[in-house]
Length: 113
Image 1 (cartoon, helix red, strand yellow):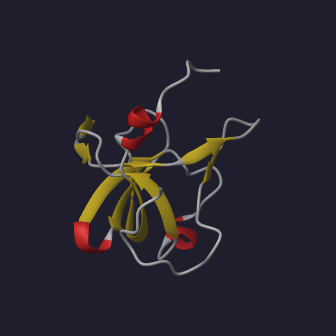
Image 2 (spheres, rainbow, N blue to C red; image 1 turned 180 degrees about the vertical axis):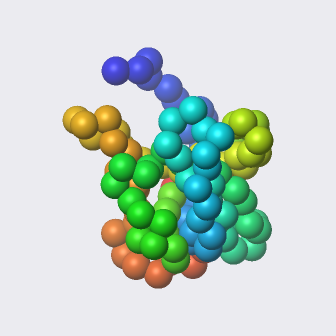
Image 3 (tube, rainbow, N blue to C red; image 1 turned 90 degrees about the vertical axis):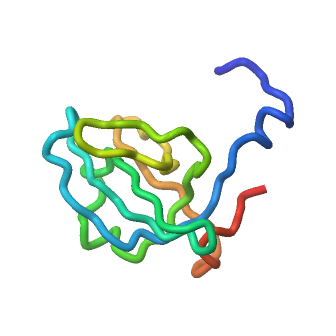
């Protein structure tokens, strides 16, 4: 378990819902991954790299709503600039299972609180 944090630490994270609108293979990544383009509504379109190829096909991800941290500093991954971090749970087989809202069709950009 990681060290305890206070609410101020948590409140620094900007976690929002977005819809995946484009998916590309990412052959230059060290581990199998996709390059995703995600619509976060009023805050705009952001890109992310995600190692989710084990459980998700490109077809299953298009128009899927996901949760992501949108206020991390950009990170260069090979020849790709990742602008947000998609949230998931690593299962016992070391596969990433994406987090999603329990109600469907929330408005892109809505914030987790």
